[in-house]
Image (cartoon, rainbow, N blue to C red; front, side, top):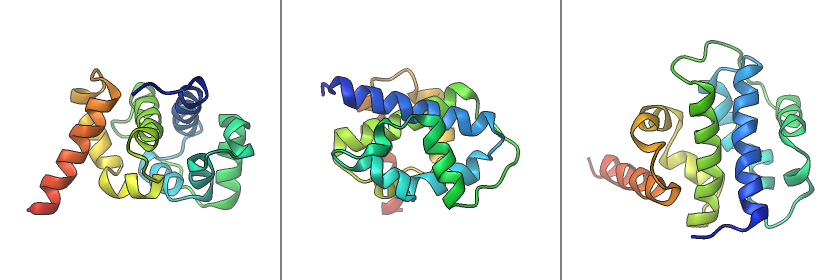
Length: 141
């Protein structure tokens, strides 16, 4: 799939948003579910919304103004992993035409954290396909 320049930029913005949340001390176990189920993520899912071009700092500010996000330890989440998770979630939205809240139901922060080492070097489409396969396997158990 060839993303447009705008879509690639939004993937990058969301990746940097996740890194900024980590740098601000927000626990990924709190930040990721809050973000993926937020109105901010829903605005990014829209075809066009002003929030898409507000930048990652503004989006984080909007998100934390509207939601309670715990600060805490990062655990095994590195800046590189957080960027990949944020980027891939947005890519997934464009690739599979799914909403952020539905993507999160298939691959929460625990799944993304454990998948990072094996999947971060894959083509994004392949990573999404594998994450969807894992979700299907888990649902059939």
